[in-house]
Each structure stands twice: as structure tokens, then as C-alpha cells.
Image 1: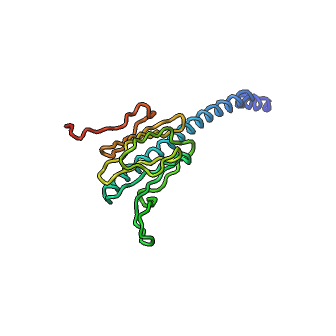
Image 2: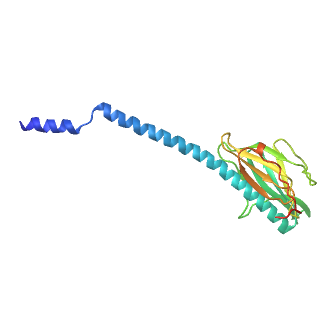
Image 3: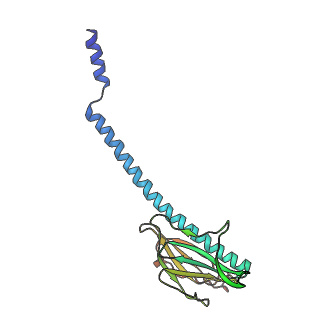
Length: 194
């Protein structure tokens, strides 16, 4: 009699195979949905980080060009998805002026991560034409007087897009969420009252 009661209690506490499979299925669906959201968020953050690096490098180039009174060039490597900053340096060994890549605490060459690329680049030629412009490399020059070549650069991964606009008159860089087609090349009226 006692064995019958124990078996009856055990039967009430157990789960059927269908119930266990249902719980496993629900956990699997929740996990896959969470993983999809994580991957999408991670890829969006890669684009955002690339845009922030680009913006900070542009601001640094403007600041250093004015402080050191020498042009700074932001070199965009379209083929390899990265950019770096160069400036003119006097080489005492050869007694010539040459371009040097800027590497310091505040600035270093940047290589985009994941699927992040330059999706569109529109640089208005200025008075400081770059020696060699190609389809793989473009240059934005920041001058010692605080001006720069006017440019709109779109960075993205096919799903997430940001556009960075650089004003010719002030060298100011500004970020826009979305594609570059809706961003006008920035012009600033220095005589306008605010």
C-alpha cells in the first residue's frame, strides 16, 4: 500500500517528455532572439565607434594645424577601410620637409572593424590640392588658419549609416545619423549674427 502512495506522489511531481521539450524549445527561441539582438547591436556599435574616431581625428587635425601653424592631412584609405593623420615634419638628417604619420596619445591610425567601410566620400577640392588623389585614397586638408577642405563622408556597414560633414570656412566637423545624400556640404556665414 505504501509503494502505491509513493508512486502516486512521484507521478504528480514528474514532467512528461513533451513538457521538457517545450521548455527547451522556449529557452532556445529566447536565446536565439537575444543573440540576434546582441549581434545587431554590436555591429551598430562598431559603426558608431568608427564615426567617433573619425570625428575626433578631424577635430584634432583642426586644433593641431592651428596650434603648430602647419597643415594637417587626414588620409582616407578607402580600399583598406581606415584613415590616419599626417603632417609636415623637418627631417634634420636629410634636411628636407616630409610627411609624417601622426602617432601620439591623442591620435593614431584607425582601421575599421567588422563590416564598417567608407560608403561615400565627397571632398570639395580646395586651394591645397593633394599631390595624388586616387579612387583608393582621398585627403582632407586642415589649414593653419582653421579652415579645411569641405567634405561629407559616409561611414556604415550596409544597415547603419552615419555622415560626417566638415565645413570649409571653420574646419568644424559634425555628425549626422543617416546617409550622406541628405547632408549638404556645410557653409558658414561668418558675418551672420547669432
